[in-house]
Image 1 (cartoon, rainbow, N blue to C red):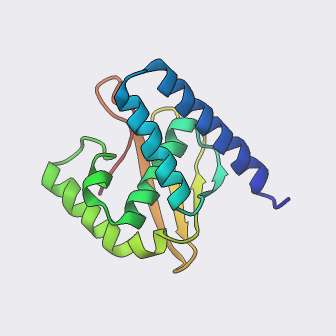
Image 2 (image 1 turned 60 degrees about the horizontal axis):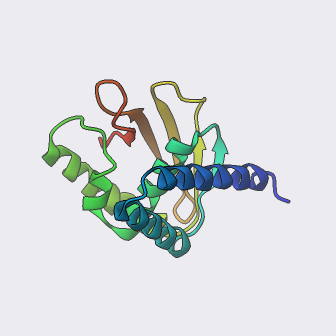
Image 3 (image 1 turned 90 degrees about the vertical axis):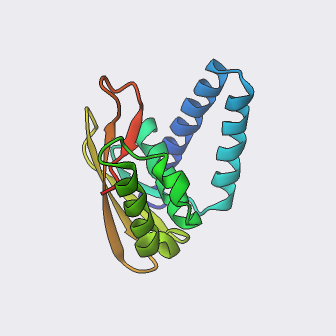
Length: 154
């Protein structure tokens, strides 16, 4: 087995377990729709290669960022953004990210997660098709972090 694959498999299983637990906690049709959307996204995109120290929440967020880049979906990328700056600034940043990284995000991508997050985590995305790198900053959103982990769109 390749060096990074056992870690990626364990992290994928942890993400899947976390998603399953979240879905069981909210038995609404919204939770079912979220599960179906995640399954469709997961099967329609190349798998993210992972190194470093993500937690299920940050891993899931980064995976969605890469999917939204690959899909060219600025609206869905903005939904993942921290509430920092104006809505127009977040939208403009999303469009720039998609222009700069979108085509390469449809291919092989490695996410290198920094140290175990407490209140912030840096993630370095490497787009193998172009060799370009994008550094993301993740943080819990909301006054007390109750808004979940979000990406800073800057």
